[in-house]
Image 1 (cartoon, rainbow, N blue to C red):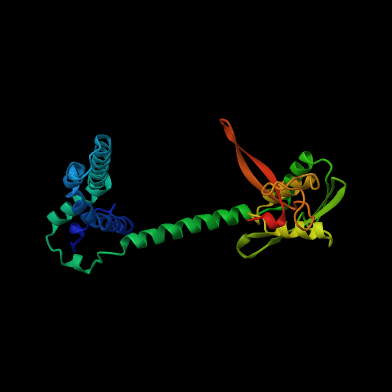
Image 2 (image 1 turned 90 degrees about the vertical axis):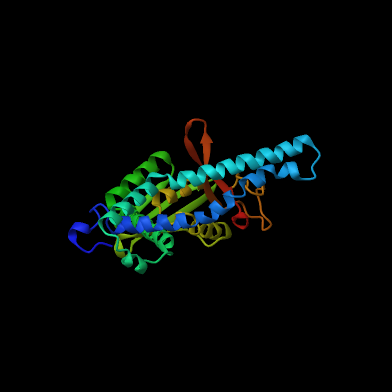
Length: 284
């Protein structure tokens, strides 16, 4: 590569872009195999006529399949080589070569590993963005929690809500099919601003302990809104059959104590979330 300032690539070709170009070139190297395979295009297309097949429709079908497949492979190969990304790399290489024909530095650049490195970097970036989003979403102050509880109360007017410790300790109480249910929800702040949402169904009897285990194993464990919707889904407890086995009682004569949500298509409208009941043994 060039060593003087006047011979350096344009500033737009920074380290990140160069690594991306190397990854693209590595992918192009794999097309050598595709090119070898394309040499067999004509033999594959005429093969049905040289076979022992005697049925015209069968011969035509195999010929048509081979022709379409070969055409698609050629289009894919051409699109890859003629893509703006590839042409940009080739033009940049041509400009660099015109500035300096000393290619000795290229011998120090690895031929392989750039695609894997690019994938690892993208995964790292995606994970970082996800972590930042989680931290931002996990920060719940007293006012935000209070607003969520007000919305919950409006939609579930028969539920009694008691809060303490700045809305970090919440007790829900309501009667479902003659059975009084009490849920305790606590919100803990962890390192980095994350939150941990704990929930349990108060009581030691069989239905309550089973509900607690089902709530503890819920998806989106630290999503308070999801948990509130789940608690509301317990307003029917004794008259709801299991969505999996379609039975009211399981082998231990226990009603469905688990709740899980799923999206349901609603025509052209956004999918609606519905809650289904499951026996604890029917989860999974």
